[in-house]
Image (tube, rainbow, N blue to C red; front, side, top):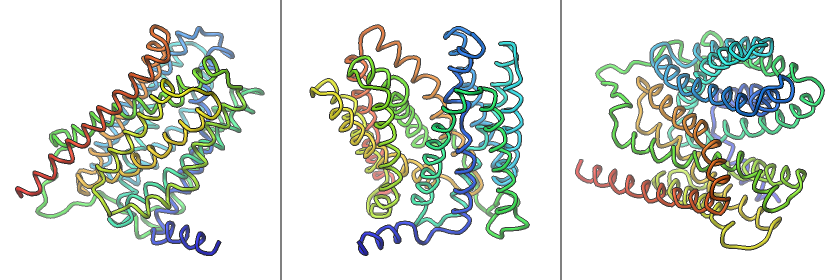
Length: 406
């Protein structure tokens, strides 16, 4: 027991206090994440809009998040990560509350777009802040701690949001907005430049160093393209997969909830320890390659093995292992390509790739399942994951050759 305790102690030790505070701010912020998971239900149940109109609003949210990633990346490099995080939290909180007061479809669409743009501009600034507060040797663990805070916050917010939605949908917008504003207040109290020496008040400029554009970094653009493929596949886990569990495997809603919770529990218990033991031992693209390949296996196995409950649990386990191997080290890769002067651009592009997948994944995945069946969807998802894994391998070989020539 003592040995296990020491393993966990080592996994969480060595991180800066600013990293812990920032993760705490993220936890508070994500604990209030209630609007987006219930947006479709709110629009169809409370506002009596059709599923098509509800889907339009969700798509607009995705488009706004793509714009927010681009603008947030640019503004982070120009004004610094701290003030952009603060502005995004305050602005997003205000717009969440405003969205709950909108009554017509045009006003809901317009407010949703600007809410998403402002709210998602937080992500590149937050990613740059984690890089700033961490050291190279513990950077991946710093991002994993942030992911842990996000997962815990999502779990708490989703569970509480379901209860609140059954009573009053409008309260979701107030709680989401107020937790954004409370997170902004905590950010100011704990990490303001005047209160915390680790926070840079302005963007860090390195004399004599030319900040290259992320949009001209061809290996990084290849990485982004491959990551869009992976994230497109990964989003099926929370969109089309629950429908498959219910319609094809005939699992109960309660059991489906347990399977989804299983993913979060595994990440919370083991990701930091696994990352601590892997960090720095191999090139990050090697871990990413295997993680993406395992994710493909987790989808394709539904077409190979029989079963229901045990098959679903086994698939989720393999998918979670793939997630733990891939996602933390994806952050490490983009950080390694950037400098303090252009980090916002790199973080912005990384945010955009996930937002793009969020727009494309749910609708097209559902369409494939409706037209050709879930078997075709799982072969497709498994196939593109394997292709992406090969792509990461090729990128690794290319970078190795570049390093050898240099």
